[in-house]
Image (cartoon, rainbow, N blue to C red; front, side, top):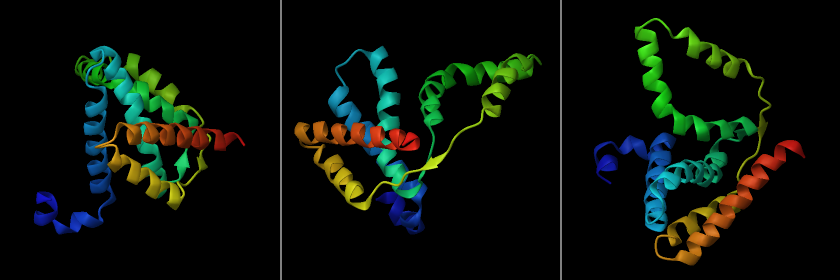
Length: 158
């Protein structure tokens, strides 16, 4: 609310709303998964955040590809890779890592479009908010998340 009060133009900024939803889902994750194994939660958090956000993102941006799943391990390993890449560039040995990046970037990616239907988007947002107070709603939200992601990634091959 403070940000909107100071910068009212952000109310029309999709990046701002994505940030709001991301923080919301982070807190929702913490609320329901806080008592698990920390190492497993670190990995599961990245997977869950990727999957839980897809219905919202695909309401606005329809392009998708199976290769998007690469973002899950990339996010996890980025904390190791990025500092190593900086050190490698400082000592002029970055070509070892750059070759792997070139292979990754030269990969041909099949892109297709799937939009989140408006009725599903509204239902998803409602269950997201109901999940604050209700574990049943959180369970239903996760069913919706799994169903949408299955639909999203299967659609490219139908």
